[in-house]
Length: 148
Image 1: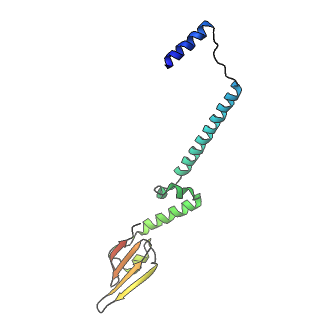
Image 2 (image 1 turned 135 degrees about the vertical axis):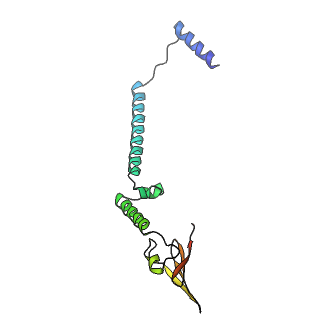
Image 3 (image 1 turned 60 degrees about the horizontal axis):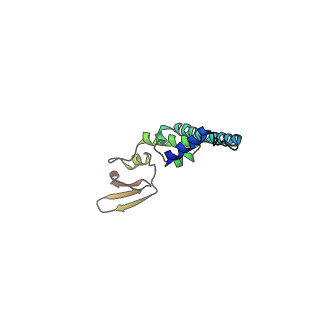
């Protein structure tokens, strides 16, 4: 059907019975195209700027949620990255550590400590945001991590 309409239109144009349609306002149409092109360019530049900003994220923060990263300024990003580097350097609690070694890890001091004293042993539960560290007679025997 479309081919037939095109053929009839072409025949009418060739015979002089019809003229090709002319744009009513070529200047207005051109202006709309210019505006659309400018809008596309602005969006592209904004996306490029956001990509460049994200590329400047310290290596330690690369796995973070992009929305969280977008809320941080450069100073805060640097501070958080430094905290992560310090934590990696200090390490996490490990089986066999004593209480002071646990407090020197990146977990620092516990939120609170629960202690059980029996006739033979002293057992501590150090409560952290990250989980629980259990010490029997002052030595870490169990680490229980919280899952979120």
